[in-house]
Every structure is written in structure tokens, then in C-alpha cells.
Amino acid sequence: MPKRDVMMGWLRIINTIGSWLIGVAVSVGLVWLAYSELHRWYTTGELLVRVQRPYVRWVPITYENYPFKFVETFAIHVLMGAMGLAICAWQCFVIRKWWINKPKQTAE
Image (cartoon, rainbow, N blue to C red; front, side, top):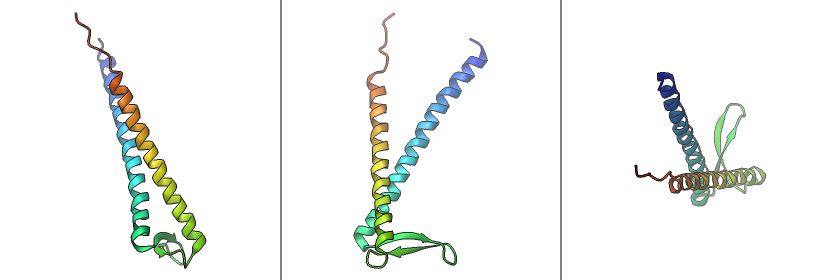
């Protein structure tokens, strides 16, 4: 077996594992961000919103202060959390399917 084929095999394995790890990290980060903001809303009644007047800063808003911006931000966080959980569930399903369908050892 040529050395190049062995290196290409390892590269394919590393690429697959790396892409899965990055995907898991992104989905977990998405869920964490969304649910931490929803927890902030549940405990304090405020959400953080980025404002660019006159400089960029983060401002806590409530429904009483800015109702449209609050509802928009709340909906975005709910959708981010749902999408992140769906991605995590899909990844678990794919891993489970791969684990169950592993090739069986043949007796030689």
C-alpha cells in the first residue's frame, strides 16, 4: 500500500472527525446563547440588545420600554434555541444510527 493512500485515509478520518466536532460545538454554542438569554428574560424580565448610537453597546430592554424590539429579540432567541436543539438531536440520531450499523466482525 503506497504511503500516499495511507495519508489520504488519515486525512479523510481527521476531516470527518473535525467537521463533526465543529458542528457539535456550533450547535451547543447556539443552544447555550439562546437559553442563557431566555433565562435572563425569565429571571429579570430583560433581554440584551445591541445598539449602535453613538457607539456600539449592549442595552437591556424590557417589553414596557421597546415592545416591538423585545418581541423580535425574544422570537429570535426562541428560534435559535429550537434550531440548536434540533441540530443536537439530529447529530445524536446520526451517531446512534452509525453505531448500530457498524460492520460485524467476520470469523476467519
